[in-house]
Image (cartoon, rainbow, N blue to C red; front, side, top):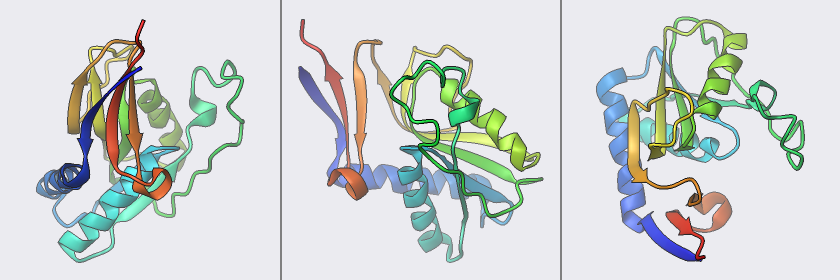
Length: 181
């Protein structure tokens, strides 16, 4: 197995700060915007973004967590996935807000499609944008594109992109894994 480090150390934090700067450019003081992390791994990025944004703009940013389990088109076929593995926590009104979905890796687009279905239970947002740490280009099954991108990776389906988070994995890194044949 071959591993290539795509991002780690200080560059990882700089990427998060750059994404926050782009969000501030488009949403100002976040009076009408909210960040929603998609379970499970998008939540780490969403929390980091909210924390960084709060230090930059000097006020609290609305942060929600969205579980899309029952909105996935494959949840019955994922044998090892528990049905109630995650939870949703959105403590604010979504109606009329600019919602920014946050996920760690964008690959086929199916997770984001499911998130768009799931968020409707919380109201009708003004807009929905997508922020992703890693955009795996050229592998979409659904025509969904991110508005904010940490890094872009051109990879084949047999490769894996693994994002590690300090909070659970003891380091911040993005690694591309290729199986040797």
